[in-house]
Length: 109
View 1: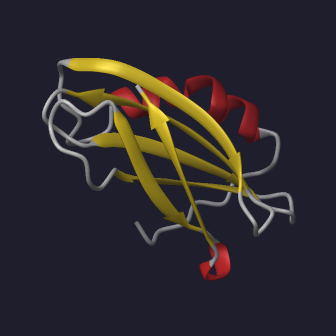
View 2 (view 1 turned 90 degrees about the vertical axis):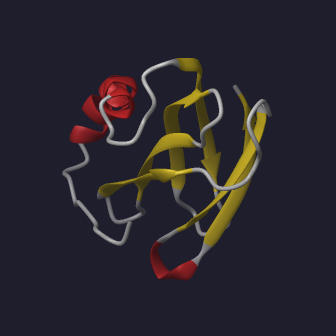
């Protein structure tokens, strides 16, 4: 979760275009996905988050986060959403951005 991958700005389009494939191939993602989700959110720290992933019944959601930094670099973070029991379709998660700024939001699969 703490690793950062810096990419040139031009790579952002490629990341966004294949984010669904990336999410599907992430370790720990159950094979029987029941829904997919995608959302953009601009936090108070000025970063734009694009989140794509899949939810499987009885498990958390795996998500891909793409941050666009004001400096022109992007980095991705992978993980599993916390909270919400099996069967819930309303899920929420908090991301912590560079410098400790955080942003939270929810989505419906």
